[in-house]
Image (tube, rainbow, N blue to C red):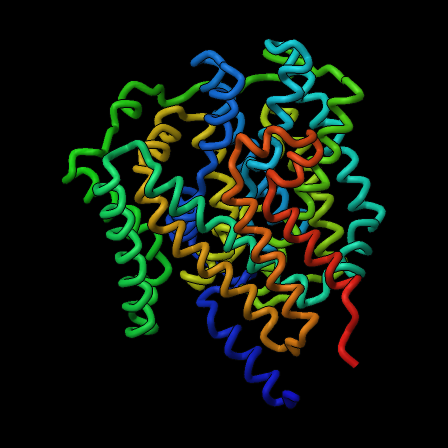
Length: 450
């Protein structure tokens, strides 16, 4: 058993890992720079781009959706960081609802009616999430079903599920350049990140600037390398406008309410809550601040309000991004002021087509190289949560089966997935949700060693 002194030493070690704690004060300029590196490491623009492609939106409609998504992500980040959960986290559009959005859009006849059904269902689902947080129902579920061994496993599989995406889709499958160039760009950006983190550790106080800006520097070096290879394309930036107004509800779009669409979206929101719980555990572990009942309840309320804002702006549901937990762990900066800057940058990008185009012009493989390191850091954070737990036979299965399930669902052929019933598609389409449910069920069903 660990003594109280050992526990205090662990706490001190974790605390020393942060160069700036959550409530630490930091200058406006530094907050803006550090916030920007969180923004560029998040693929916020990808979700609206995929939706626009899947449902066949026109170029103007696509631009409006991307613009609304950025603004929703910014306002949601500010709401969650400063008014609700009050932890350093960034909100962004979730991949989870993609299948449901396409299904609702098509079932409602497509066009304006189809999109209004998506937004109406999102609006109702968001209100339900707020109620779950206000009544404390979701918090009771977490306390009963997610002990440290399960919470650590969920954090571990969050990183594990994202890693194949970072490598397969963002590096090997990137269309910006040839596969040889993509691999080289990813290696350069990843090596730059590791180099500057090492420099920050070696020089400690004097080298802190290297560590806290390591993600930003890695992306810049990656872009310079891409330019030297001739694969950096800024043509979209030159043609984009500096400022444009976002869409307005009931003028540019409306809401319609269909029962089957609402039921579908409610299921999706429950999936989102299950996924974002893993993100909350990851962030709380990185900043060495255990989640309290108040944190979780306010977090669920914040999640609901954030999704309410997103649907009100004509965008899709948002959720906490686990990528940022990895960046906090790498840079050591957990100041909420930085995430206030993240929210500000998102709103600014949403109002400026040129700045949004600049972010989306970063080669996919460059982001993939940094993203892969971040995914590994997230998984290690999950192991740290479990390190004080006794790993017996039961615990081995709780960790191993969700790990296997995560990889199985990440690699599942899409053709086979689409042959399954709709609800099963939603469940298996989210490896994190399916693996998290497996960990929870196994923890309840498997007998503990006597």
